[in-house]
Length: 371
Ligand code: FAD
Ligand code: UDP
Image (spheres, rainbow, N blue to C red):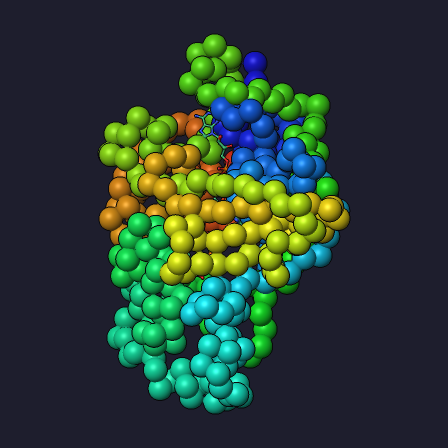
């Protein structure tokens, strides 16, 4: 008899399995329908021997000391600050939009204070910031919005920014200084030996059994357990009772090149040209030295593996119905990006999983790692 069946071996499932096993002495069975652990953070060496991220570029960043310290139990780190360029008007310029972006694009020589005036002169006044269009035009005006955000967002989501919650484009700040880092979090680092190794350590406890290539539906009724942690799509769990929740998907196209470097930074975004949104080169992130290099192109798709919840009001209304049902389902706990329909980064999922562990164990919420 297992104390817990954990469905999904991504961050949500693996953190909870580790805590329940190592922190509370529970016997845990983890199942994943994929042939590997680590969920969407899974990485592996490709045929050329380059360490790649199978589900697109994953860069770890967090402001949470607790989350960083918790994960540090399972990995050492390699400091890495991600930098992104956008291909706009035939030039490669920094995104988030900063002082250099505007100066390069318009052939100007503005100082920070002058850029503030420039933004103020082009920004559109908005009473309420509701949509992903509002966020950007209220800060940098319509022209920069169209150059950097409109096309990219329409491609990525199959929706106009005016149809998406403000929170989506609000992920990308605007700066008046020359800081060209994609993230400004306190902790920015990559697991030294990759994500999969980190997950292997997390799931290596003797109280944890892992079954891959296994859908939880093939287990329930055959393997006895007391409680379940579910980290797959919440609508699938309830057989789409309230209709399908939209999840956006991607197709990844990998290319290996017989040269050391392919592009000048970790990721180049293509807001307006091409069918793909961005090209990422893994060696920047992993620090691997190799005579060849592998890059990945991301093509947004409506169908396929669920990767992104789609943040907009009507979807949230559907999710609320599932959430209520989830709350009323005894002995099943829902956690993670798919099960709680939240556009979470990796660190946020770790924090959510640690908080759920503490709730289950009746620990103080502040006791993040519940050690
Ligand atoms: P998942 O990793 O999706 O894990 C859920 C697991 O459950 C999956 O392995 C799935 O196979 C399994 N499962 C589902 N249903 C069943 C079932 N019925 N039976 C058995 N198994 C099941 N975050 C960052 O912080 N930084 C980044 O740079 C970043 N980049 C990203 C890039 C892309 C292209 C994507 C898609 C995401 C990115 N993320 C990034 C987000 C990150 O991937 C997620 O926050 C995190 O992986 C979510 O973990 P999770 O455990 O909630 O879900
Ligand atoms: N975005 C954009 N242009 C860019 C970068 C981002 O329009 O050059 C918008 C787009 O809607 C994207 C969102 O901002 O989906 C969030 O960007 P982020 O890089 O955080 O996306 P993720 O890495 O999660 O796919």
